[in-house]
Amino acid sequence: MQPNFADPGLERWAQPEPPAEGKETDGSGWQQEKVMRDIRETAKSDKFTSAQVEEWDALFDFHLRYRSPESLPMAPHVLTTATTSRSIQLHGMPIPWNDMWSTLRRLPRPHLNTDTSTSSLPLPDLLAAASTSSAIQKDLPLENSVTGTNHPKKARDKAAEAYRTRLEVSQLPRSLPCVVELKQLYFIALPEFEGEMSVGIGRVCKLVEAGEQVTAATVEWLQRRGWSNKPTETGFYWGKSPMFDAFKDGWKVATNEHPIADFLPVRVELTEGSVHAKSSSLTHKQQRFCLQASCVVRLKEFCALVRPELLNNQARLKPKSRLTKVAKLK
Image (cartoon, rainbow, N blue to C red; front, side, top):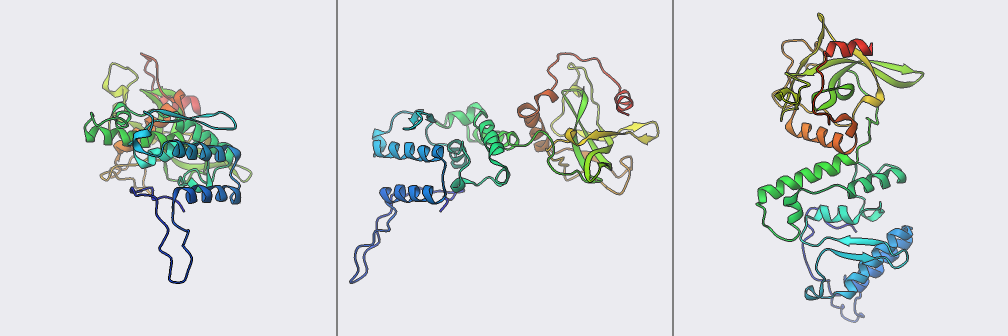
């Protein structure tokens, strides 16, 4: 039985039900001893790994050592596994329920598999994703919520949202794992920087196949409005909700070919006021492309955590024409 991740609630260990008339005492109450015994039985039946079992044993030992709130050690507290002497740090309470399970679930466990985005991945990929997630840093307002409330709720909520976004994008692959679709918009890695990132937005107009496998795609380009390669200018940075226009090569929309490995897994999300008519040219007057602010945040976090080579760390770059870049790639 999995816990209610949305609202676990707090309650005492349940006592056994009163025995029915003429029956012996019912021993099915959810007392501490029964919970521990049932988890160990589940570990055997579901074939938990030795690492998973020793984590549970370390947690059980913690409950047996400290039976009252007054006896709990000051956080952070370190649990040490009995067989491998591996350290597990408990940062303390209160923290959000989902954050607590994300911390405990450093190894993939069948009984705590609530992340549908990674549940179908093979074990090596799951371990890699878990390792990356455990290194994600929390902003100060959220970190301080462990020991106090000296940050306003609005700041803690904002920090919690940022932390969830980092966890989400840290588990994404470096490139789009599925086949790209015609007439869809994608974030695509560029060979050179355009401001603070070497990322652009393109619409797939043709698939390039080798046998039965799609290896590349021809892309129609958008360009960020007012972009600049000068850090001293506003256009160097992606705004909160930047706008994009069709990028022309002469009279036509500029196109070139990119390998599938250049397509990023972050989805392009437009604002409600945007219009993307897939059947029309990108230059059509009804087209309007404006990114959602949350989409820009996810893209920047993805680049910082998964593809740092796409972030521009140079103080100054020599501006280059987008047409020159397209010509180079043709």
